[in-house]
Amino acid sequence: MDVLLNGSCAVLLYHRVNNLKTDPQLLNVTPQHFDEQLSYLKKNHFVIQIDELLHNLEHKKRFPKKCVALTFDDGYADNYLEALPILESHNMQALFYIATGTLNTDNEFWWDAVERIILLNENIPLQDQFSLDEKVFDLKNLDTQKRFQIYTQLLPLFRKMVAKQREEKIAELAAMFNSLSPRASHRPMTFDELKKLSASKSAVIGAHTHMHPSLGALDYNQQLEEIKTSKDILENILSNNLIHFSFPFGTIADYDADTIVICKNLDFKMVAANFPYIVNRNSNIFHFPRFLVRDWNQQQFSASLNFFIN
Ligand SMILES: [Zn+2]
Image (cartoon, rainbow, N blue to C red):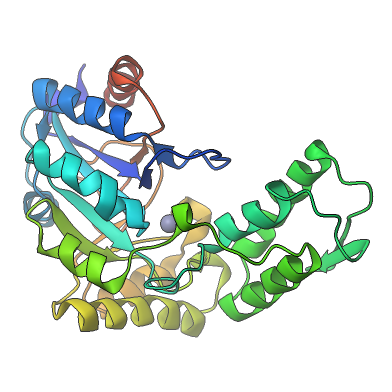
């Protein structure tokens, strides 16, 4: 049975809308594909407003037929520059969850910095070894394959660290590889862009921690600091109460019971996770599922969406 006809909603998760040279985490959708995807939704689905998504989840109501909701994680500048005009042209709304630690700087998000330093760099490192979390990485004779191996092994280790230690180790790597200039294509939004995004009818803003850790790896106080800092900063910039939050990475390993208690105590009303399932009246509003969208053309998008919801 088509579960979407049964009062459910598919919440979609995007990160970036851009034209990028490289995208090892598969976070990007090109502007053309994003436009095709929204055109497909307009013809075949009902894209719900964020208030209505909240209302239906809070009151355990059935969703309209063929319902879809749109969300973005992280706060890349292209969310404002590329995604917003396309959303506005289709008269659709998305919920943008913003990590505040790199906001209004030229710095890259930490996973992008690791990509730049290790993958997009032919420099021979100044040292033969890099140690992290009791693991030692051999940096001798780096070829493309070995660089990719090290990159994929480092990311999950960095993910579980507290921000200060992670920042220090990434700075150490950057110096070792002599890769110090962040890419303009990977910058986060400025305060001004965030304010303009927030002023659009096509956007609702939520928080996404300060330094984007895996919250499940942190203790209660570390989690509280990460979550509260992002909420405070965003409320300050936007002069608005923030009621939406999404867990960084968002898989079941990336949050725990403490995270949910903290979200409730900080008065978040609706919290997004990242595991593929439809949302319905029985979904838990403090960790509801979302489907990751890849750089699909209209045909691939429609096939994936039909696979998600059936
Ligand atoms: Zn994120």
